[in-house]
Image (cartoon, rainbow over all chains, first blue to last red):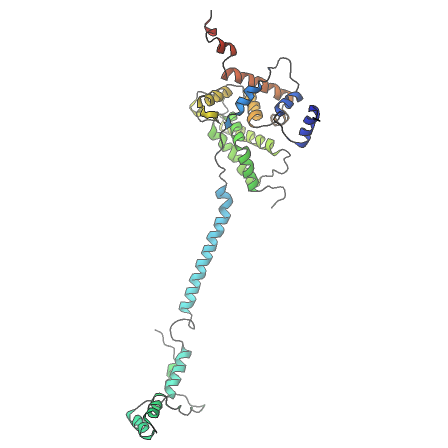
Length: 167
Length: 179
């Protein structure tokens, strides 16, 4: 059953909806005075075929996205700063730098100080006393560790190696 | 964010939906598309920055009211509220995308709109291209709905008269040369 026109008008108004015939309904709301010219619906439809020109885009993109762009720049700056700091730390930190640290220097020096120097005399003695030639060579290559120094004595070479040298 | 504020995405959506009709309405007031465009941007940028649009019961009608105020204010500030002159150079930019690329018809329509009285031009633009009801137009222009409807009828008749040849002229092209 079709809805009576008055009811449809009321429904549309209550629902805030709009029909194709709203123009007509509007005109019925505002009673047409006798002297007013009639509505030419065809001409109205003809006019509606003309579409208003679209406006230029709202200059809002840069505005809205500015904070995001700022964040990206800030992130890149933070990454760059981190890289610079890391490089600086690796370059100048004494433990991480390539310059031989004093601890390692001391260890090597201790080893050197504790090892006996190889001389012709000691080599001849080893060859003479060793049961075989192989044992003599092993004795030259891996000399027995000398007895450690007493606690109150230090090797001069080890003491010298503790000095920090700047290159 | 303030609960009454609407976000930029929603405002951009309103701009896309109603921007063309709003621009036309502003152009119908200022007569110059560049000034109308400025007024339109001014309204929407203000809405994005600090706009409280949620309190508006009828957002579309509210936008038309804002654009009207912006266009009128700009004209007042610049002291350039002059009647539209369809023969002036600033009147050259198109207001419409015509059907079938009939640019002569577009010029014809623009010219016919320009020679209408301001109040009639506003009503016809708001009703035909703005899709506003006479009740909405009445609220916007602070007139009665009857007045809005009456202005619409007169404006439509004048437009028709200006744009289309009279039926007698079509049937008898020599009708005007009689006598």
